[in-house]
Amino acid sequence: MLDSGVTDKLGSVPREKGTAMHAVIVKVTIQDEAAAQSALTSDVVPRVSAAPGFVAGYWVSLPGGKGTGTIVFDSESAARAVSQQVQTPPPGAAVTVDSVEVGEVVANA
Image 1 (cartoon, helix red, strand yellow):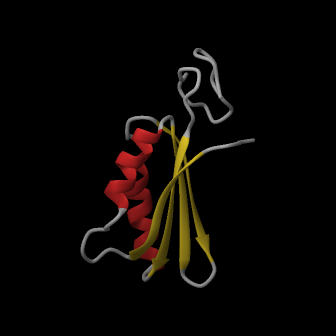
Image 2: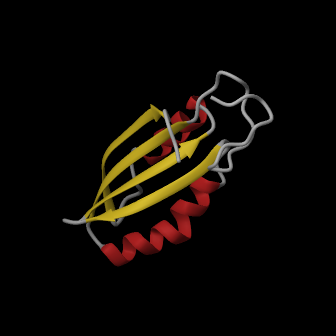
């Protein structure tokens, strides 16, 4: 946990002592890889990175038409707010959301 005025390696904004970063972990099944990549770069990443408390985000393509996203926020409330938005993609989306979880970041390098 960081003292106020200290920035961590992920470049987060200073947090009050005793607060912890939280991550949203999203697992998806990809139906259309090209459309999913396009939506990710043109819509998802810009929208998520503009969310209050955003620290960092990583989206990973996995074998078997799967994908995962790890999106880090400076507080649990910020992470939970975004997790609610990604629960259900819009109709016709190139991915199906399999799970969305929020957890405390316990270490980073």
